[in-house]
Length: 90
Image (cartoon, rainbow, N blue to C red; front, side):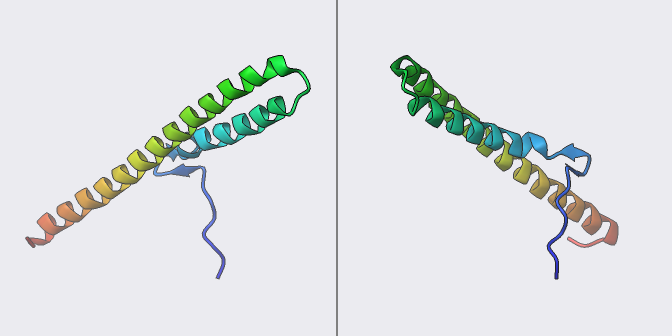
């Protein structure tokens, strides 16, 4: 059985906001590594700064993923409570 297709929008929410910071962090790490391998030692300090920026982007991605997951769980919980009220269950 084939895996479900990836969608850019889930319940009218752009998923790029969740995974975008991780993509940017990966690109920054690649750029920082290229600067560290450069012959010009003046560029090495910029590379270390890019590693710091990549770490910040990665942590923002983690916060986005966690908050999106919590919002989905909350929406399912609200739907379940509404259904229970309509059916007269506790």
